[in-house]
Image (cartoon, rainbow, N blue to C red):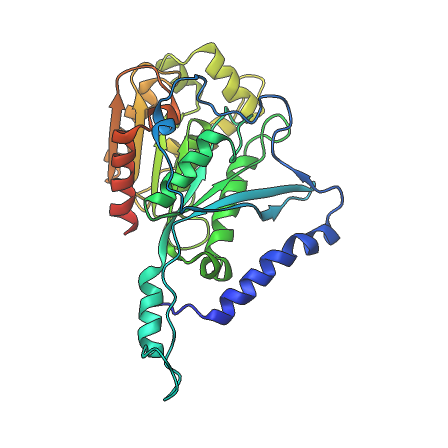
Length: 347
């Protein structure tokens, strides 16, 4: 049990307020990584239909905090995330003597605080690693949906192509997990740092899967996560796999731009950016969702499931008919499956 101290929470809150001020003193030319081109922040769900996550209506009592700075890079890029939290748990008064009005002992309060610590989910938007934003309506919907399920969701931005190529995005996502897991931030947001999961769609699915596969050993330290759910993620970026899986020329071009390679002939990054090549038996459980005829070949998902099975890593694969992509398939049925998976593995 890890008692959460009021003093630590207060200190963390104060630090969160002054951190951007302190950072500005050490970095000149601070800039946001939010896309500034017209349409660049739009969702990867390129349809006006009310499908997928758009069928979710958030409850009114979800709390949203925007643009918390989780890191500042050497070039001045400020990395930010939004936090979507479930309604606050009732506060407890601790019995400090005969004059106390509520008879809750300090030990009982510590147990109660531990009981209300929530699992966290890192939510990673898609957009070909080159566009998209944590705050667009679709991904805000994802963030609020996770909060409605009892998770504290951290929806983050990361550096994008062409300003930054691999491994910038996965380095940013890893930094976000470390920031969330920091004891002061974990206390501030009321999360259990041992129960952090990752969710992503499309390019964000690749990053969520790579986050799960990167490193080895304990799932409660550093940037490791305890569970992964990804939708429509390209998980094998090597040329042989893309050709065998009948990836379109457009997808191959997107991958090359992300990797910073002119061709696949001499592109070691393709191996390093592929979650399927980084798996080991200590990696977390994975939920894989895809549609059967979408932009990302289904062989990417089925091959990933086979690789997980070979290593004995718990996983689920859910393929649905049609052409919808990423959070376009996150309808009520898929939401129920993803939530059940994450609840089962994050507690």
